[in-house]
Length: 304
Image 1 (cartoon, rainbow, N blue to C red):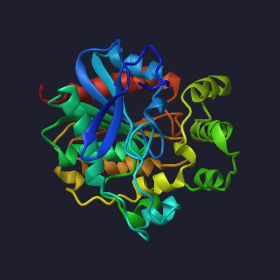
Image 2 (image 1 turned 60 degrees about the vertical axis):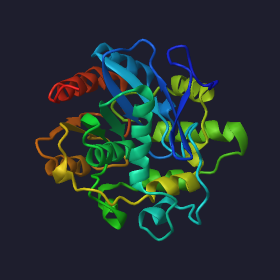
Image 3 (image 1 turned 180 degrees about the vertical axis):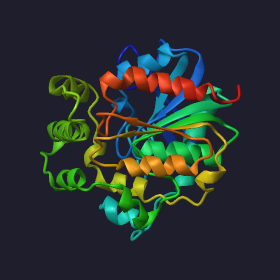
Image 4 (image 1 turned 60 degrees about the horizontal axis):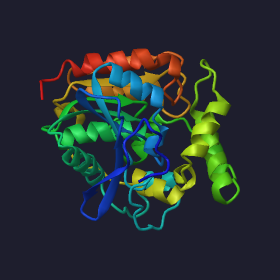
């Protein structure tokens, strides 16, 4: 059992995709349509705000969040030669696994839960993965929400045109102490950096949950390189069958709004929404809008 769980969440459970263990938990006070949450590059499931998860539950979802491989409590994969995520994205280093493997991890979680089909909400790199889960496993996905993410069709250096590099470069140059305190400061630096300018960042609140659920992921560049370097060989977005909602923050310091526009453009009948004032985060003030839009998109799906 994870010591990072609060009483709101079930004890940590593990699904297995071959030898890879995938950690997940369930919001205890949630029931209804299955909703699987996928967080982004190098970050654990604990980055999902509890309050947002509770608003999803209020919209009639059973909420489960999981750690991607190479993040959180899931299996850390063997090192490759790259410790530079940008080099890995450009394909200059060998990959440890494929993006298909990462989609199969999500299905392994669904299998343990007994979910035949689910709605999938992914944020940041998790949004790109949500697109790919729907493309590789169309019979398992009811609908998707892709938030603050680049289009699945983009690969290698073509991804760069969708990114802003100022914050990424500052975080890459930042130095933190070794050990737990350094992990806390690295997590805080990321949380502070991705926050929107419009909605105030609560440093004390962020420090409280980070200290309770501290994770090495935000400064584990080797794990990030393995994740971002995982190549996708699957279908194009134009073949997606699931109803899709694409969200983009107009103050996002990492991913340009055009990434969301292009994602929605290539998915048949996708809906696109700009979250005004949102950075590369999910601000508390927008939780009602995000959860209501997720519900509306889910209602377009064929019943499970």
